[in-house]
Length: 204
Image (cartoon, rainbow, N blue to C red; front, side, top):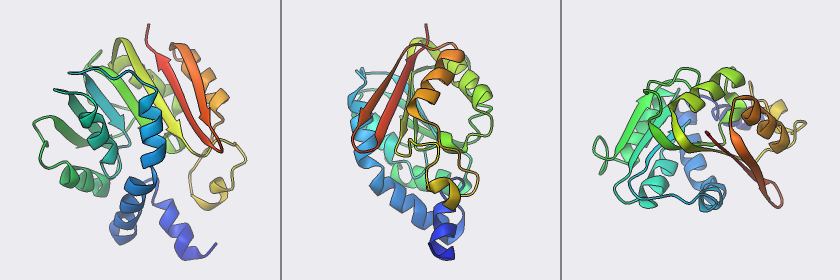
């Protein structure tokens, strides 16, 4: 793979500049099948408060808000470029029903037991400290709240780890074990051939 393509895909972790903007457009488009399938597995209710960690270009925020009347939808991303894009495509609902901020999964700027649902679409590969991040997700979920991880790369020896700097791929089973260790219960792995997976855990 060329250096240009490698540089482009490395922007998955922290989109910056022109390459980052191109990657955000690409992710908003190509993540749609995975995200829609994963969200279909969750019985999303009206007026839920929801958070998408690593919200990227903001398309998942749109999808969440459309699935829940009267919802409040929050997005957080470590990338300034991502935050700008997510705010732009959600401008009609921005600061009314959709709220976007810059920050890390390792230290979420929300109070305890705020969310009914937390999602992470194609982003856990880049979380710096998985146990710490999962404890943060657990903290901000309400009792009975759900955490849904959606991934396309599901093999630990994935070629993408050689292309994208700082990327770690976990198997769905490894993610399930991590959720259990963080205190989640009734964790389930859903897989759709050839490579989609959604792992859902519930805060008891």
